[in-house]
Image 1: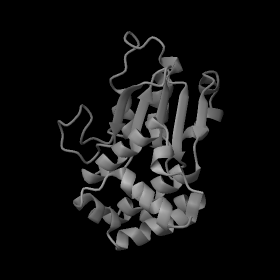
Image 2: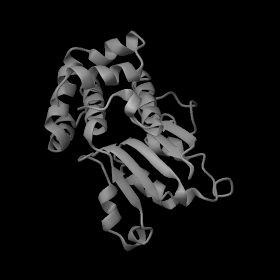
Image 3: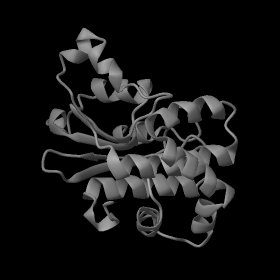
Image 4: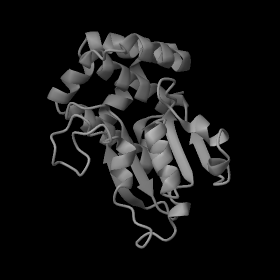
Length: 214
């Protein structure tokens, strides 16, 4: 049975809320959250690649990934226990974001969906420098992965990504049903209509988990 929104841990709820904000702002729907050793929310971030410059320090640049947006405010002086913090992100971190997390001394990384196109957590086993950090990497999978793939697939088809076939084939290797549904919902303009109707991400999540089979 699918998990409904109220069953999701707070960091995941907030991460997907940030992903939905990104979508509504016309940029890639990925959200990220940093929590401290007591699981208190410290920073949140979202993709801002297609934001207007000025909405954040990285906005409008190819560095404006959700994880970078969430991590940019962390300083060792203000956060001496950062190695005990957790990074939650709705999509597997890319090489840049994974590397930034490592160098920021984040030791716990949780991601919802695998990214066969640009995901980089496999680097954890490739470099001794990273291995010695003893990272705790958690792939949440399940409904969280499905939902992220549906949302991001729909977005990528909507913006007609120039490498759409390559991206979709890599994601289909993760969950073909989710990718196919994302494409179908894009044809129906499901998410566009939800944004215009000012629907909350919780309502969208529950609708998909209730009315579709994965």
